[in-house]
Image 1 (cartoon, rainbow, N blue to C red):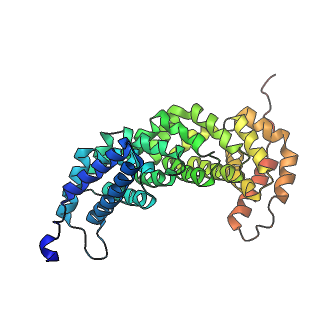
Image 2: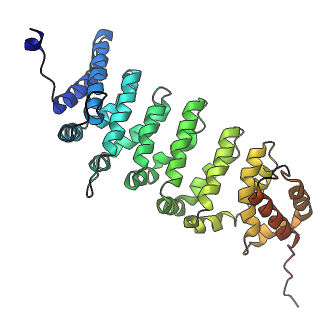
Image 3: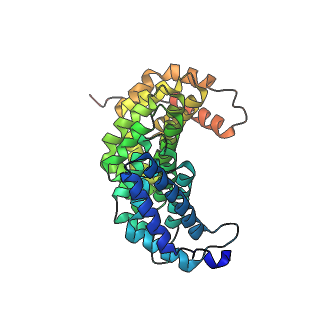
Length: 340
């Protein structure tokens, strides 16, 4: 008898429509009871959609069902509605939402990336995800989706070309450690994933970017200061960024900042600063300002470097670089004027 009255399985399209309906009801719910019911419905059908797209312990995902579900997701604009409601759904449902979103992002053929195309046509979706860092509840969920989006250069380009990118300089200083850490992970991915894209971005926004980046390097937050130095070193020392590197090491204020960081109380911050300091010294075409600063501090720098982290006996590369650096500073001489 149970088999006779067993409900018919819902189609992928129906599941997507029911999720959308539940989320809309959750947004406009007039009572606690109505919102609770909508939340339960959203959780149930998000789990069903995740099973359709990813499979489960009992069944493998079906290609036709995946296509049907995905097409319904795109046509109903479910991803935008889902992100908009992340903070309204239950904890486990948020995890399912992340898995659904990222699974769809990875769908592609040799000629098409349908979810990327959908997001390109709905750019606001990316900005909603960025805005997620303003909520402690969903910052981590939004970060997981954003970093998956950033894998695709056209989506990363939208973020870098928007003023919304500069909000990350505030998000990475969030007093909640988990939010700040996740925001920095996304920030780092944006800067390092697509080298040519980031190089072009820095050419256009160099002054604004570095004015804000200086704030991170000057931060009293140990983790933020160290991470900022590490990322800046990795960014500028890549050959793609040669023009940006030359501009950076031609600025006397940058040299002063790095020299101060060499004397930071944290050994790890000192070490990260060293990787940038060596580029100022190694540059064969130093500006007169850079040369004068190094000459003025020549004796102190040599003495400082001779004692600098001498316990790193096993780090051959560091010790070789330090020895070369000392020799270059010792060899510095004022440029004689050509006057009669």
